[in-house]
Image (cartoon, rainbow, N blue to C red; front, side):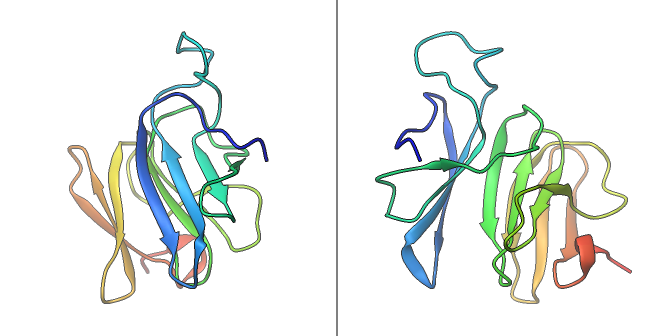
Length: 141
């Protein structure tokens, strides 16, 4: 933990309903390879266990694309909408995978859980897609 997040647009914030000190932050923009200025930093998803006093970069293998929306899933995993695709991190995993099959490469501006247990992704120009996050990799079949 280094206690800081990049000096870029903060696009989403998620609080763990089981522990309000456990929070997640999605950071928009590109890394310091593309953004100039002090503190541009690296990383797109950050986790804190102390209400935001300290942050850990959990971006791992994510591509360097803006993150738009983050959602904690009922099983403890995470869903992340980015300017490229929807990604999922399984509970306890360190790596991210593309969620679902058949979703074209497109910006997923919002990811939300519906009352039916489905994860909904609002995309730019491709409509709203649903994923069954209770199935492996969000399969819709």
